[in-house]
Image (cartoon, rainbow, N blue to C red; front, side):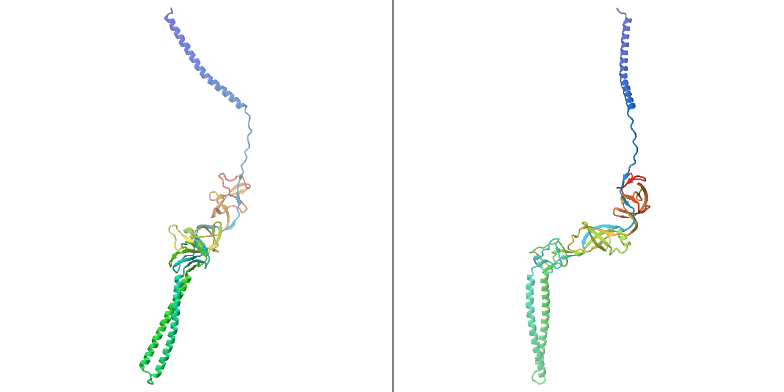
Length: 403
């Protein structure tokens, strides 16, 4: 039998062995990763030390391709551009002067029709006027015949009065017979006067009826265009009914709005009237003249409406009221200025000229605008070339070339 001390020693020996085993296991788990890391570091050091050396590339200066315009100075007169519409300077309503049924319509009496002066638009049935004309002519002929008889009677009565006047002193004719003869003569003369007045009234009625017959044919009063055609054959129209509207071709005008500031410039340049302008529509340009303004300033828009007469317009034109147009009005003249696109000016006061293939900034002053172009004066020569290409990297000294 083992003693108690031996058993205790055996237990202690087993516990110590187990501790040593755990410690060895822990050391092994730490050593393996460290060995892998060390091996990786050695490989990396080897690869870095044995890599080939790359030769450094030389720095090449970039050359910018830019567009430019010559800095030539000139006298420029910019155009002010306004926008408006074509309006009818002369427009009338076509109204019949007599009533009746539509008997005939002209071939061009249609919406948008183009008609010439004197061309038939509408013919009304003249039956009533023709009948009235015949009645008046019959009455007139009857009264003229009766007037001849009245004149013959007056002639007889005048001779009778003279004869009785000679016989009155001889006793062969009484005073009463003479008075009766004079009274009959006076009555005959009065009837003649009334007959003449009746003939005058009938002649007036005759002329009026003839005019009504003429008015049954409605013709174009001038060359122009028809709008608002509202009648057809067989329709009965009364006096004053509107059957169409007519626009005078030669009186088309451009109407456009001008603000107070711009109109003040008009006045500062001198009398705005008779100023020659260009009216542009659908790629076509028409000459015109500023003519007048509206009678009052528009409080809502703060400006006035200006009218420009268009030259040489006739029925052959395609312009019509309502067409949207551009009106170009000449502005003041500027002497010794350079025209450049607005992209050429940086910061409102700097341009870049090309000097020895490099950019050289120059100070300028904007004199005026003309559409998308600027008129400038500045510290440059007329022989210089001003860069018009805009890019963020632009700056003094950049090397450039032009196409």
